[in-house]
Length: 78
Length: 358
Image (cartoon, rainbow over all chains, first blue to last red; front, side, top):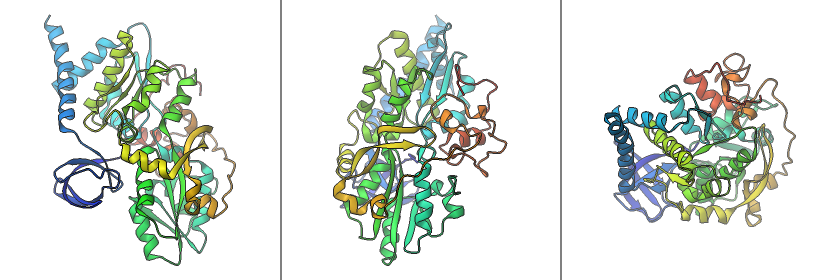
């Protein structure tokens, strides 16, 4: 029910937008996220963009993961 | 793969030897990832990952399903809802088996199109779900709906049920993995009540196995250090304050109400109904729908499973009388229901949740 997929906004006209993921295009409504701009990655749920994807924050999380995974390897060497 | 192994090692190093810990997820999609990744088999013995109330289809009251069936049998109505709702069993059967005029949609916008193309019918959108799914329904109301469009609201609030869980001493939750897409709407700060008032680490996680395990590691780290706070390992999507625009639109159309949860009972302040100003769109008022008393499904322990007091495999109907093709209880219907997920991912346990009371 709460499934949502990240898609890139490629066209915007008021609250209507077209978004793309893996070559699939979809009409997406921006009523819940009207400051989304062309080029933004947004999370789409039930035809609505519900939140922007912040690439910087996503990378930070990945770094956190690498650190945690790496940290333990160092402990093992020690 | 190295990264995954590293996180698992980290989880093992943080899990105590001398006591059991229970971490609960409250999102069907989280349970899906946990089950299909085989993650539980990699966790240390003292760490239990328990599925909680993450399936809105499962907790939708039988009364609303009976109303939906009755409405779809009226000649002047077309009932419209999400696919899973058509198959949920009730004492009257399911909408698909016993209803007449019904249509499945994947977006509330389709319900509006149906209303426009059937001006001589009343279109009742049976709108269920947690905050993620409430937001799109509020958005179509904001956009404007035709006069022949009504909402049968069965929306539920995630923090409200989680508060019931933490107050139940039988469950004994040590940490929550907070639902990623509910959090995108309500914000990570919505879970502060659990870390601050109840001292339970609550960490927002995404839907990849590695990300979920990172969330589990963060909960364990907090438990070890004693510094309890709200964590967020899905910060690429979830902001502390959430989606304020969505919250504003939801608040405009919906107000908090006291509602029933299937197999669980009445929980004050845990549901959403349309505000009085929009009562003309409220199917319960427009069609004078009166609450129907819930029936008991013989042998079904969905309520116990949803509350984290038993695993699906502890139910005597599981995999026998109750399967995804012949669901006896609501938790076997949707791909977010714990029983459905455990059936399809071939999960089973010889043991039950520690301290299970079922």
